[in-house]
Length: 157
Image (cartoon, one colour):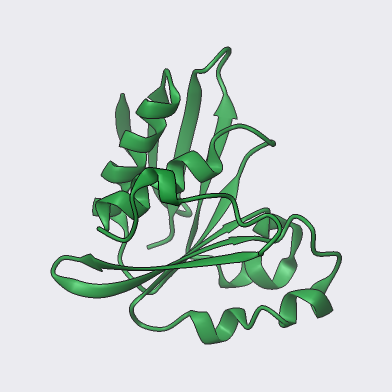
């Protein structure tokens, strides 16, 4: 289900899931790899499970139950308070799909969110050069046929 491979751009971890429940479980496991402050790009086509993965991350942080986590497509930003290794952590789930340009992006105040205790997960962030430059890694989700997904996590060292 998982493998870790060192790469020139950092550490790469790969997971294969067979269902939405598996994807939530991978999200729970990913928390062990995350160290605030971190900004991760969430990449994947519509419906591949980006928000489903965030459900598992939020649950592992005791920030929210999976059914409380929804896509921020129209609100742009959801904020959750949790804990990681016994310390408070802020989880920000952002969706910039509907934003047209850097000027609209500036209204989100992304720089202010990147506090020492923050995990910032940005869906569709690869659309924007400024987000790509700030990113400390990415989570790419691709369909592997039916409900199966391949999840590749690349973290910069």
